Length: 625
Image 1 (spheres, rainbow, N blue to C red):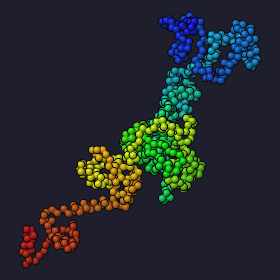
Image 2: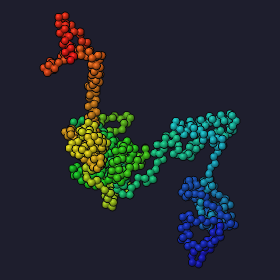
Image 3: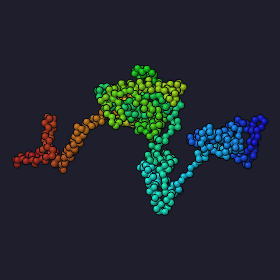
Image 4: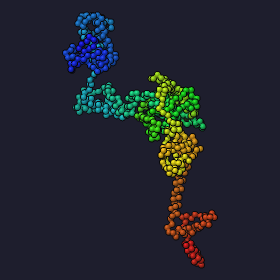
């Protein structure tokens, strides 16, 4: 309403007519934040509202040149001190400005005067000079019936898994439109639609819905994805990403010199710094053994590792992560892995299927492995018209040398590459973060770490100890538990998948673990779990190939037939007569002269002379007694 002598402003509420006094700076802040809006009083002089534009930079080049042309004539009027009511003076200014800017079709004096009036009533806002065609909302030229037909055909023909093209969809629309014209439900002039119009209709649809209908939800999520800072962490070991990948090199056995194939790399990377915490290379594939090995490598201190490999830089990664971000592999959903997370106090977060951008740091690390300069034995993607080399023939790197090379890359090369987004190195970020916030805790000892990350199963402890897939474990250390719980009881058994020389057996009452060695120590020393399973599988196949299983089944059938024939005698007299005929006496057994088998042969009748018949009868009666 007015400005007070002290510089404050008096405002009046449009509804209640109550006046409020505001400081000028406070009022501007409320207006800029949108908490206050101004409204023209009723009956005030009409003003021309500026067009709704986000910014003047959103104008197309042609529309911008039109605004510059109008401003050139208006600035000429201002420079000549000509008001908008002097028509003859405005004509002179138009001629001079048109000659200067090279305008072959200059506007009239009335038009320029109207531009000046609009700019004045809009308080000098240049947006009022924008042509209305530049910001107008174009109405759809199709009729309501044609709009419904286009919408229905797009939903039925284009938005499905058949992935029909827009050209085919347009042909279907025109065919159905012609049928509508023939039926008299649509005029002929409305039954036309162009390919460009159809393209605009599809572009106006929701992009995620189109991709989901044509390619499935996984493709739609990948194309329309956004992370929204979901992979950020505030300190080291707050979020650790875990994943597997097959390496693109064929390695050679150090003992035999034969190609072993492509190993699998399991790695843990800190999301805060991108620093590699630990890795595990094996030929086991993406399984629980690989995850346990990588987890042990990430948690344990690595001073001995760096000194043994003669690495130039330290590897300060150690400690238990707060949370693991993992995918939906079967090894991560196993009860054993979930129990490992509970024992170590780690939370497990499962990323959605086919969303690799939720683990960006580990995926980026895998992509950098292709920059390694190891050319011998490398596996390349197949390409057309290119002679492919056999990587098994060109393989020249031993497994141990390859592991040492990967360790050197992880410790000395990768953490010292500058992150262009953070303008920092992963090594610097990790060391500074560890100094600011050290890891929460460590396992009490390395054996406890091995036991926590070990595989586990509830087994039966019997008189011979514990049998784990044919391996016997147990000794005097189990006598106390057997006295207290009996000769047979069930309990939790743990074993290190990389070393089966001993196992941990839990006391059912005290929950303490007892170290129990394997009684086949020569076989189990340094033996891994996967090696043992492979050896058993090989032995089983060898027995199957040699016919041992078929022989056993046939022997069981022969034994069954023998017992059935042995009990085939019907009466006691028949059984006794068969024993007499076979000559079963203790003398023959003691002297070792066993009678030959007469199984299945019926005993012949006893034939004696008449003179000795009474004697024979008497002997039979004596034998009966």
